[in-house]
Image (cartoon, rainbow, N blue to C red):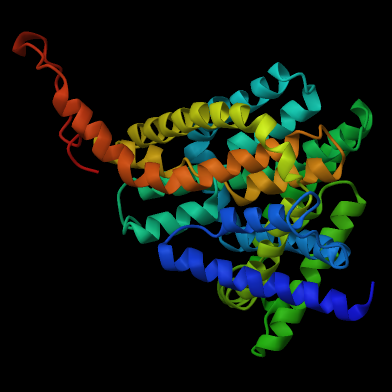
Length: 403
């Protein structure tokens, strides 16, 4: 293909991402569904397939996954992760059981086998940190009492990726029990080592990477991330886990500076990733899986609301705050697509990609709506219930009317 055609296609893709992002920002919703729809429109079987730029977009998509996980790691320090593990582990366990199991059961009922069940369990389990953070900001709930509970659940999900992704990678590679066990031990060992080093020598690591020159800081952090991600992938651990661990190891001003410098790159390549996932999905393959995706979405909307409600109740939050926490956790997005994308690349069950695309499209739209309206609906339904006789009325906690 002529280089001019490649440049035209790449220019059109990046310009399109910018315009779609502007449209999403104007109407106050996540651009993820628009990126996925754009990929469907210009992929194989779409309106205008792109051929020349497919290889470049594929590489850009992989960088997008790496940057998503790096930025996620930069959000948390090692001490934050350890604290959350100790205090919020029960909420994480409930979250896993209620939201991963439906995906696994759905895959088995569809006859896709155990490997696809592990993949779909991850797709339905992980909430979208990016979408939820934006929703909390848009609704002015950052300072609410239930917000730390929501963030704790998200942190535990994110940390679980360091264990889940190596297991998934080993399964997709067709590794046997011994090879898979070795891969998992390496991944867990690497995660534990990074946490220990970050706790004890975090300042020294950050000082080594630190630079007053933004250009040098950007090059060092980005280069180190790609290097570690590549080594991790060579060891069959997952490039995403490697990037996540690099983010955890950096802290303080270095993490803040790297976050500021890398955010535009993250947004660009993450957008390319979502477009690439859409490009690799034939639009004609979505209608046959639309009903299963819709049913799975309905079930996991209920289970996520139940997760948030239980976690907030355990933390002593009032009833209104419990419903808000549950409704906020519903959105799925970037990491569900990352998990499905890894499986699609490995050539697992062909219907998995279309189902994941339809599922995420549904919940990335429904999520902000549940965050806004679940609590008012629950309050209205409670008011319409017939009054309970005074002799049988339960004693209400004083916090039940406060969020």
